[in-house]
Image 1 (tube, rainbow, N blue to C red):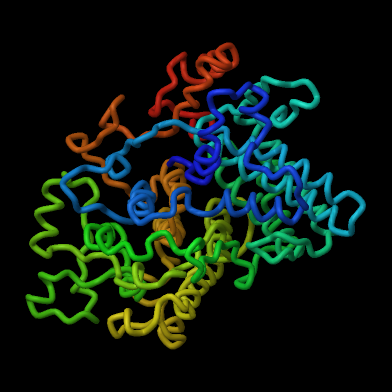
Image 2 (cartoon, one colour):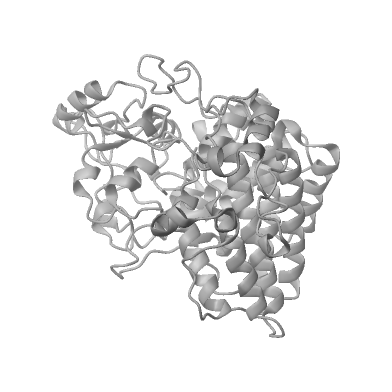
Length: 510
């Protein structure tokens, strides 16, 4: 649930925290060079925003637990696996980057790339705002980054207003990219404004769908308008961060053998892949040692066993010692460059539209989008350079396999109920985040839809406020209690009855 993308900014700021004013808290980023070019600033912002917050195997393993993709099998229980956190607070660090974004645009003034940098700045502000509001509720947005205009204590905007402003900023950003030129410093899309323009449209779809219960008729019409306009992501437009052989840009799980052998794919993942005869299973996991000893072969779906995330840590550890569970595929620690971090894919876009059609937001054939999304992610793994055949247990994904995927449980349930089909669509979307380090949005999708059904055992839950419920948000930063108490107390009072708790329900989920 916690938006790990923002934590990295806090790491760089530790040395300056003792002297921070409210101006610094909301509007400055001391990790900015005194002399810069717009491309330098763009690279810095993208790297700090989208790379994993602390690139080492232990923390990366922890970062995949919230969305129930993986399970740790050691006696010391990890709070992320049991509905709590080592640090249950959100962050406003993303808003500190607004000054950097402003300087980036100023440095590009008069250049052919100015329009692209303006679009980039608005997209990034929207990205930060979207994560913050889902994490906490009401947050500073409209007045953030305006210290130079005399606003040192930005107000907390209502969450409903934040959604509206984010959508407006993305629409404006799309317009800037429409007239933009290729710009420097972009480590995601190589400065291609046409790809950024598509991403702005796709992000609006994602945000509108996140509104879910709160979406208005006008916003549903906007969703349909964007889809019908057709300027959306293609398979060549995945928004992803690519790791490399450079020691400073390695995949976070590289060389993490200890973490690999105490980490299992969850039973939710393994069971779904087995039911669908989905060969991603052989890319994700190793066969369970006990199954191999029992006569199963490594290319048999039945040789794989996922771990139940709600089981107590001591029992998980004992079962691991008995070889009961599959462990993470060995390729994850063998490849320095590893799998790219998929931030937003064409496949996710397909599943978003399929869900919207099933929900009656627009006309179309949900089955087509469902199948296109699955084909796209299967092709992605088929062509993944960090998944050589020697690690796939004799079960590689081939084009022939993809062509015949939609049989049995994987076939779209046209004769079933709407809920049957939503279960297929949203579970496939959930799988996109498997071991990506960015699966926290999948947890929010679960909060919105209940899909897939995450297990909760009150006897093992570490939720300190109520072990019988799922946390729905993070608390506001602790600094707000002393540096901004009036605005903080009003926000907590207006939204949560005066208690800044993790189980309180924010507006978007009410």
